[in-house]
Image (cartoon, rainbow, N blue to C red; front, side):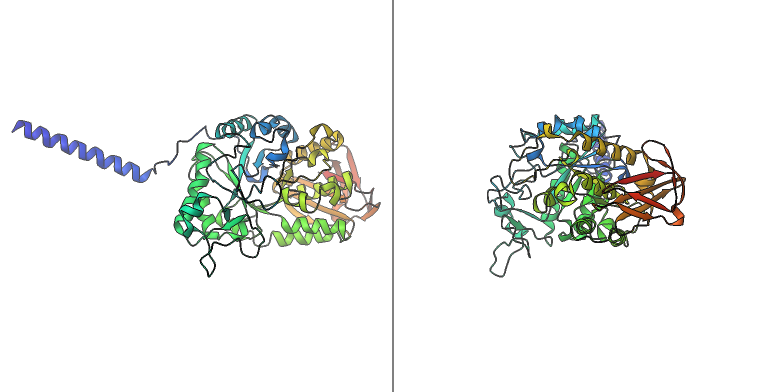
Length: 459
């Protein structure tokens, strides 16, 4: 009898232990992957970000993740604090353009392109970036895969099909190297979110720039971002939508993409449009953003427009004009993004379908110093980072103030290749200081700016 009581007692203890364990598992989801690395405690707030886009094929002679790691100090010295890596994944065999194919034709969502290195190389790159107080975000291609992605044969029902039952390319495009995924399929969406989570766990990355975001349903982004943000309990992650829909902010994105702003800036230079149109574009992009803290990422170049439209030197009137344009893009209620090479005035277009190594020894040191100066001031100015914008532009000069609490910054940038006179509104007259030197400046009724000259004043 005594032995039977002991047996029952032991069974009851085991049952109680099992119940407690089950309860714990219910409240704390089991991680599908081991977490590599520690939380990054220097993660920039979303308004503090300076994003640096890296085209791995062009960034170094080697064209590898190790090549990126070797130049982390230069990115840090520029003043950037978020490194955005173009797609790191193996690419498909079907090539739309160029000998290496598009990095946006993903063959395997959970692998590193062997041309770039290994998972360990990525882990080391992230670790070293974190040591230099820089976050790392990956480019994510959710809308489509390459035609030799394993999903094609293993899960053909995860793709959109035509009336003949054939998998299709993204509708309305000529992207013949990729197949369109079906976001009505829950299994596919779960697999996609799992793949995104994989990189947060196994490489300790700090967020994603999401390609083609406007064409992916809002509900998917909401689910994905909710899941991703639950992984790192003590750290935020940054999410950038390569899209312009206001709904992206509702889904949880930190930023949208300044497509309209860039095209407007191009027209100011190409078509002699008034600088006041930049203010109009700003109003368009910020209509209904729901939260004053939300920001649009703005740029004077990226991998797409660098190849299709031209370098900043081509588009914005040479070295001086490209800097004048960058001032507006970086300071006008934005989070700035820099594409590798623009900071040194690199004159060659970068074909991201091929290997086009940047010749860093050809750096324009004066331009690099100018970029560093502009970024350094932004990094110290709460008015620029999160202030209220008011526009005062003329046809030639983009003029605006950014105001936060007691700090007020006045930006004037002549976007023409001619000397321009600016009639100063009464609200801007008075005593200011040069933002870079601290020299006193009295603003009267009129200011004359030389071709592509800019002034940054504060009080």
